[in-house]
Each structure stands twice: as structure tokens, then as C-alpha cells.
Image (cartoon, helix red, strand yellow):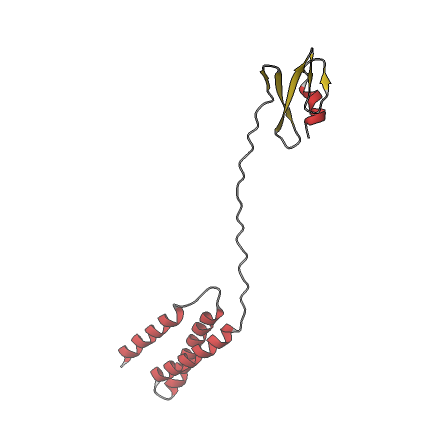
Length: 150
């Protein structure tokens, strides 16, 4: 009889503690209530010379009561995971000047760390910019940055 009792008690405890969800208090309440109920039922059953029956009845009543109490207790939700996505660094080339026939393209540094391509067209002895401005000679990057380096 004792062998059967210990086997049944072990199975009951394994069943009680195996279904706990970390975000649900119902399972934890049932497990805790079942364990405390089985303990109390065993003590009471021992006094009436039937420890096994007292443990089973106490465990069942404790599990039901613990599940009911546990389902009414709200657990805080875990904070949402924050995902940080790495942004690739912008590829910035050095300012360059490119000559192609009657045009000159100068890369002018702008405020966001990149470059703005300014195309100048030859006009007589000078050059005309994209906004119609006239330069006697090829302007410097600093001269173009004041107008196109936004």
C-alpha cells in the first residue's frame, strides 16, 4: 500500500508542477494550492488513519482553489523587445572635379555629410552654373559651397 501511495503522490506532484506558464498565474496557483492542500490533507488524513486519501482530497481541493485564485492575479506583461537595426554608414567620396568636353562637374560638400554635384557649362571665356550665375574661371569648391552646399 505504501508503494502505491508514494507512486501516486509522485505522479500528482509531477503533474501539478509541469504545466506552469510564466505569464499565467493559474498554473502556478494550482501547483502551489495543490501542494499546500496535499500537505494539509495528509496531516488531517494521518489523524484519521488514512493519510493517502487525505492527501489526494486535500491536493485536489487545493489545486482547484489555487487555480481560481491564481487566475484572478494579474502578472505584469514583460516589456516589449527593442530591436536596433544597424544603418550602413554613408559612402562619401572625396570632392572631385570632372572635365567632359564643355562641362565641368564639381562635387560640393553639403550639410548632411554628402556631396552635391554642380555642373558648370563653358560660355565664352568663363563658366555658367546651374542657376545661371557666371564665373570668369572655374570656381573653387568654397565658392560653390555657399550656393549649393545645403
